[in-house]
Image (tube, rainbow over all chains, first blue to last red; front, side, top):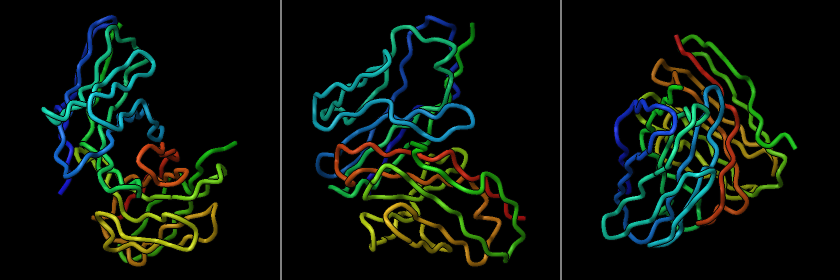
Amino acid sequence: GDSVTQMEGPVTLSEEAFLTINCTYTATGYPSLFWYVQYPGEGLQLLLKATKADDKGSNKGFEATYRKETTSFHLEKGSVQVSDSAVYFCALDGSGNTGKLIFGQGTTLQVKP
Amino acid sequence: NAGVTQTPKFQVLKTGQSMTLQCAQDMNHNSMYWYRQDPGMGLRLIYYSASEGTTDKGEVPNGYNVSRLNKREFSLRLESAAPSQTSVYFCASSGAGGLTDTQYFGPGTRLTVL
């Protein structure tokens, strides 16, 4: 079945460092791909998404490109801030119009001043 | 708009007890979802409702039942709680359950079963 694999955390960075969180997926067909973020004590919120190959999603300085050839959707940010400290989830919707998301296990990011 | 609201925020149950988790959304969304979040496992879909009057099983439905009471409300019931159901439960909703629809999540309910 469909699955998502993320890099293990926690990831600890200094402020203004470059961030990459790896995400790879297994799916039949052409899934939509998402990054969600969960701040401490809160629910998840959508960070960015891409619905077809070579699409780039971007939001708040974060970017991810849908790479079908490598089945990847890595999250990047050029300069992280302390306020970016959160748990990041990669997810896919391969089910075709039902919104049944499959999530990765989450990657905790801690940014130190 | 309050978005997606969940009650209660915290709950402790004894094995065998029953309870209902409540979820409501005020965004006029068609689709609603229940997930559980366990350490190191991400979120897993328990049940979903693509539209009012319909419900369907997700990845981990055993031990749970749901009711789509109306367009706004989607409840999750544990008939006989087990320690394996200790988790954080999230409700979410989306406009039409389509490929590009954003799911909006509630703040979660932290459930402990002793």
